[in-house]
Length: 562
Image (cartoon, rainbow, N blue to C red; front, top):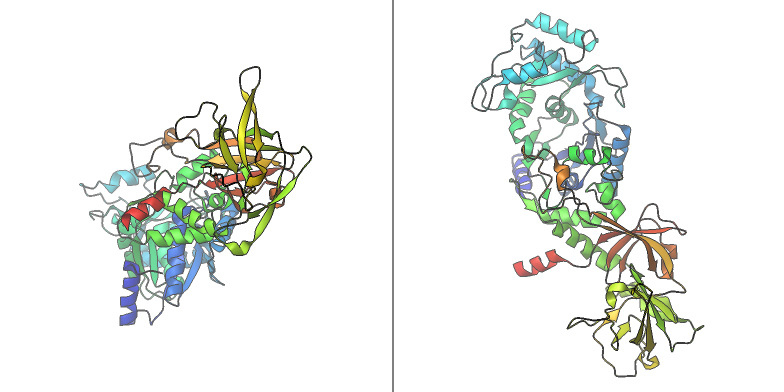
């Protein structure tokens, strides 16, 4: 973990022995959706800070809103955090573990005159709240007696009132310049079946109330959250200060804010991601176009690449935009050393080598990964008929075109130099076959011809090739911005979705070694990019997702910065 302002705070706390040398953090997701790449930054930070300081990190689910929560989301979060490589040991908790303690704390606030039951509707509460330039007004129910508030709060818990008819509010300051301190709501009535507690409760705490108490109960020392909670920190502190000495508390945690991740061309709002899923813009939370951790995993990203990315972007106090090219650079760097090289033709053009014996098949030698010689070599079958990419042939080539053209020579990777002799077209004038000759003296690794050619093409033997579906993914957002979650004027982010974010190529051809490809296996398709066998891929129906192309714009940017 590199040094940052949070680590500097911890260093000072260590120096002053503020927490007796303890560092205890937590990652507190809401189980109302799947985690995304922004959450990965928080996961890496919280678990990383704890590990770097010999401390502990809890996984705690903020399950205080059962109307939007589901066990599916809990399970996916557990899987994602583990997949990223982090372990909470026996410290997995839920805010619902503390529902009784949270209720008792609310009773204490009422007894101390710091909370009251309010009958205003949600709309009326907003009206009474005031604005950034105008102070709010006290609720007409603000001066209820302690006894009346206790009786009403108990009746709220007993289910005697309708949903939304009453709330419990903190009694702070309706003239505070911080709107979060203008008598915020602590509890609301909500009849919804909770995924853990069932229908035991019909009142649920608000996040800003439950979070600091949960931290204190678990003995958290440093409560690290994103920058949008900076204005909520006074309320975090007010709750803990008002409950000072509470028998449930093990520590007095401090909240520290850091900048959230904003990534170009990427939707970073869980609310918008949920909309994409529910309205059918994508095929699910793990659609490879999604920035969810499960989507990135299915697409072929590795936990090492994501952790590397989170480390590179660092931890800042102010929001900024990160180029998605940096994330792509991290996965290229990781897979460059790990991924086997294979040949795959995505848009096939038939090539017949007319002077190659019809029934002859050669097993040619090819390295598995030139960056990692220890991976060894493989055999590739070569025969009279091969497929090349349609784009690798031009009947009327432009200048400096070094691929195949009439009368021109190119090398087939790991094989021979071939020369285009004839072009076969169908009745519509479409090219359907290229006829070539080969030079037996140009066999790769044994070339005695002395010939030099500038073009080298990938290919697959038509006789041995396997059919596969290949899915080419592009950014979900059409422009270079984000989803604009914080832009009030941008009401419908779906207008900015990229209509070409997915291209399915149903009939591609791959070399026969990919018969053994299993879901999650990753490869570099020569000259094409990095690809991953999809979760639905089988030996009978191969499906590959493009993780990222070979072009690396961020690498070029890095070189310029050096």
